[in-house]
Amino acid sequence: MSASSPYIPGHYLLQLMGSGLLPESITQYLEEHLKKTGLDPLQLDSARLTPQSLEALLLAWPEIQPQSLAVAFGDQVTLTSQGNLSLLIMTAPQLRDALTLHTFLPLLSDAVTLQFYETADHGYVQIIPHSGSALLDELLVLYGCAALCKLSRLLTGHTFSARVNLASVYRGSLTMIESATCQNWQANALVSSIAFPLSALELSSHFADAITHRRLVKDCEDRMQRRQNMQPLVTRLRQLISASEPTMDQESAARALNMSRSTLKRQLAAENTSFQTVLTDIRKEKAVRLLLGTTLPLDEIAEQLGYSDQTNFSHAFRQWSGFTPGQYRKHSR
Image 1 (spheres, helix red, strand yellow):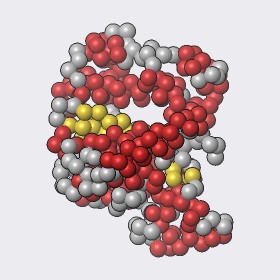
Image 2 (tube, rainbow, N blue to C red; image 1 turned 180 degrees about the vertical axis):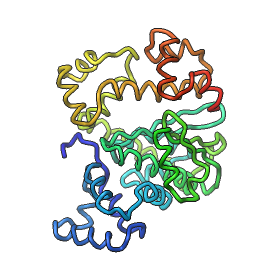
Image 3 (cartoon, rainbow, N blue to C red; image 1 turned 135 degrees about the horizontal axis):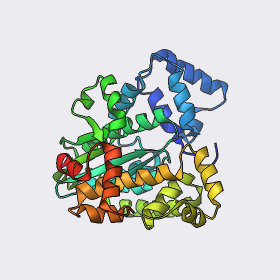
Image 4 (cartoon, rainbow, N blue to C red; image 1 turned 60 degrees about the vertical axis):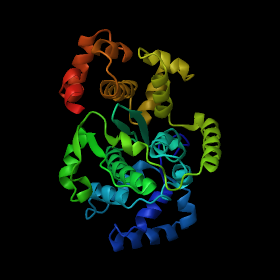
């Protein structure tokens, strides 16, 4: 695996092996396999596992129901489960502050991206997977939703209703999961997200420590700067498009990334994606944020997304969601 490939931190596999969620025979096999390869738990804790290797692991045992496993594993999350970001999250002053720490997620894993934004009455966390494995993408979303809901309760000590709406592509997952955790989850969105009540965002963390938190934020900022060029190409491209004019094309993106258009195309293909896929995903995510988080008229939203007119935007949006932008805005609020 190259330094820039999406990865899952090895400590999650260690946690899963100790969770009691896997059949005992599988846990024993994995422990024996690790011994044979000379990889002790401390080494696994700092290892980077490819999504494809984890997918192969799950598919090797048909008695495992991956979707249910992902939700159950997320529901077991603890405040110390998030590796080197755990203390950063714990010391945040309020839940809102903890949710905005998504900017440092690449220090933990490049296989998924979180985005946070607020509307008049909710705070939304979008969960965007890009592991290169369709199965792992699905499991990352399911785990992420369950884990974020649980972490928010652990941080604040309060129980409140967070609304989970998965991307419609995962609708079949909900029919396979027998868990009370998912009883009120829906799957009819463009982008998977969790909606937190505005009042919940203002809840204080039980473990708030302003001085420690500021120091940890500065440390994470320094580490993010050092690793900027080691990020997967798809991550760098997403950041570039998100920060640029919406009309950026593939040629301009390649120049900004100091490579030829053919090299950009080839390297994105190696990460199981394409320029158009990344651009469309970003447009979907931003469209949802603008439709739900602002009162901008549709023609202004179309312009911000890089469409020549509102008609083209509406046509694209209907292809993505089955709704016009106006219908989506009305029914999703």
